[in-house]
Image 1 (cartoon, one colour):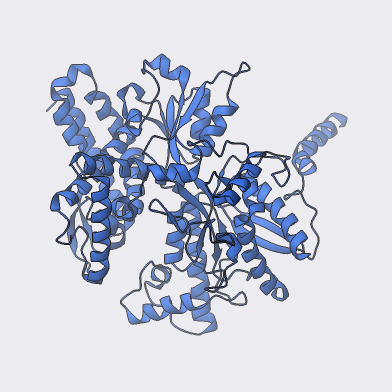
Image 2: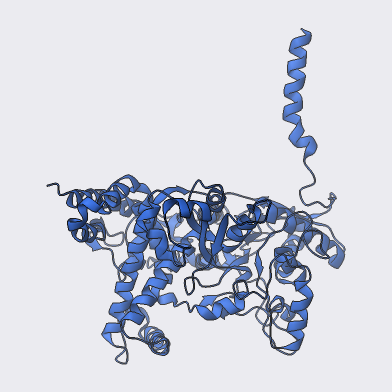
Length: 605
């Protein structure tokens, strides 16, 4: 009996220990009358802890009222987008049928949060009604207040779907967040083609994308020197040695793949004889032409001032980029759902090389240095291989509605103040300051790059003085050209027309091509790179590079259509046809095509 009681006591202690050891979520004591924000985020535990703590202290000091954050962590940005879309559609349906007593027609659930107005008048009324409601006392809400983290694409898409709203009326924005008294811009709207701020989306930190690699494993595999470009990850020496992450689960990983494709477009355009000045001239002309044509514009149409050869180079460059991604996928050891896993595995030698967001790569490279300070892993952003993109924060429609009725208005105001905090100097310090430094994080070095201009070197004396002040406590050298976001942005110009409209379809394509069909892809790649099959390599590669041409049912017309994937058709594929049908048909196509490429390489019939 005593023995059994001892076993039970040990089990109870094991279960209770995490609760006994757990500290206050924000590190700040809470009170029953605190305002409670619900924030949905893909950010990790360290970021959640420091920003909850920092905001609670800031809000109490500035407004004399406690404010506590409850995090809603439902997965990566893709899962968050699905969650929010589902929550709003369900809430709108309940409001429309229960509160208004109206009919909920077929297709309303999909179109109410669609990215464009439906043609059907009944659906259009619901679509417009949803976008007219933004009231903390309304039932139309997501039970969350803030969307914090992810990529610019995800927040822009959320805005197009009506999920996020403007926090401040036009002209009423806190000006000190966005510019100094003398007019120096602190948070630009755009940098080198990337969007950093819109009326609904506010970049809070910035990132580049690059390559992490294990120096010891590279030597073992016989790779000469160190990698310098995305193309190095496609080297057959790295067969089954590349750590990859699923772009359909992570917006940041999808962005990294877009950078590879974008650089290939640029390289093809330059190789076709066009200069940077001509690229700017042509893209600006195409932008004006597109606006003038309105709904009658068809992708790929050109004004008379732009040569056809330029557009052909863009389209061929896009295919070059897809082929590069295909080769990297063929080298993959795995594709994980968690992008943070890749640099960890590379540091341990479980993968020789992989893609990474800058702060994950640098942090892991520093962490795995030997006792003698010798580096075993390194990270680099390929020169001209990555834009500087933002990690935004946005206010959700109906913010404040999750709070008790008497606190809804105050809670909504606190949600807007959270955005203010994140963009302020106080919030920005959390991204880059060392733990324990004045105004810095308490426990974790987040190692993220702040977005505010006054954290980086400048020729303006006031901004430079602020930069030097922050440098005293920063965990990274913000003056390093490899870290300085404003210097990096000058080395890469992002042309959204090239790959931005293709972001969604690229995610789906890479998922099907490199993950769902990985077995067939890797078997073909292995056969193609076998020296014994060299005479047939080019013909096998041509087969490997074939893009899907499949038959699909058009959602609008109900007719069967043969659709070839290319630069022109890609952006509209997932709108015109059911994404599940597209994925299924592509899977069938690629498995057959890859198997055929392998047979060609091996000389089999």
